Amino acid sequence: MSHPKCDADDIHWPSLIAAISAISAVGIAIGLGLPLLSIILEKRGISSTMIGLNTAMAGVAAMMAAPVTSRLAHEFGVARTMMTAVVISAFSALGFYFADAFWMWFPLRIVFHGATTMLFILSEFWINAAAPPKRRGFVLGMYATGMAVGFAGGPLLFSALGSDGITPFLVGSAIILLAAIPIYLARHESPDLDEKPNHHFVRYIWLVPMASAAAFVYGSVQAGGLSLFPVYATREGFSESQAALLLTVMAIGNMAFQIPIGMLSDRIKDRRILLGLMALTGVIGTLALPLLVDNWILLSSMLLLWGGCVSGMYTVGLTHLGSRLTGSDLVAANAAFIFCYAIGTIAGPQTVGISMDVAGTDGFAWALATFFALYVVLSIGRSVFGSKQT
Image (cartoon, rainbow, N blue to C red; front, side, top):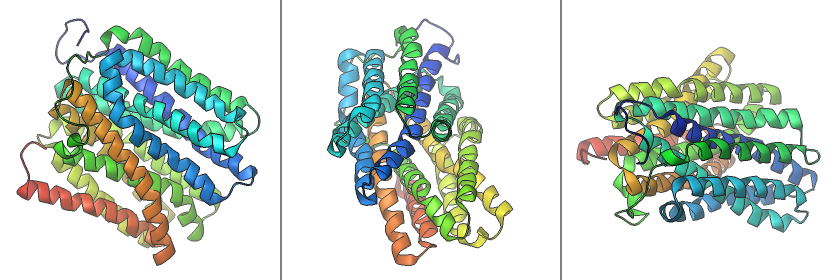
């Protein structure tokens, strides 16, 4: 690590600001981009199936970018790789406006989401490497809050800018480009990667299974829940604006709980216990959904808590990863973590959609509860039969 010598418990603010800026910019770009691109394709008369297929390229791109990210960071340095990814994502975001033919959107999605995936992985590695061990949960809670604010800010920007003309594309690209400034300013603090990872990329998925599975569950529930919750809510008799309001409540929970959950994870000796408890809360919350649907106050309170627990699994999973691994092993493990998240973002919407077709409206809650329940089973299995480390 090439930052100046200081107390081990000190927080390296330039590193923290660089990583949070990168992830907030990515969050805003994706939060603005997903509804914007879907609406434009809808207006062009593209079928829902094809819009879905085009959107799924995000997960494909993440799965392609994850294995090569640590190699690029090892070759060119973390900060330089991140700044290059910022430029690529900004220009490819603008490219959607100029790409008239629908087929062009497939390679553009892969380039855009591939570059943003690299920013995801490297900003997470950077912040994990720079976080003081005793305050790792707190620092990652701040990071996850930045990410949540970005994801919530994107749709807000979309509602303000609309989908007409070049403006939303220019704004999105400019926000991404701004992230290059703090990365450039903190470039001398970016962690060095002198050695290559000890294992093949895929090995890291199994090396810290509680963290990898947390990323998968978060990806599945976030993508499946967010994409199909409006459908669920309107089928249950809520208006579109009420459904949007409930999604906002979830997003507030997502933002509000990250720092407290991170600080709590710093005080707990074994973070896996906290991960298991949050998954259990997820199971109870989702199974209670059909019972609470007639009571607005109970439903929104549950969604607030549930939103915090879902994203808390991501924060604590990431913290658990950082407490177990260092250096290039941590970059490779971070890439595996995002890879599992990407698989989740593909599996979630498919599973929830099929479940709703087969079992009706309640299939929404049952599918999401299943993802959490699988994690609870893994958690119990690891504590009974597993190792002390992972």
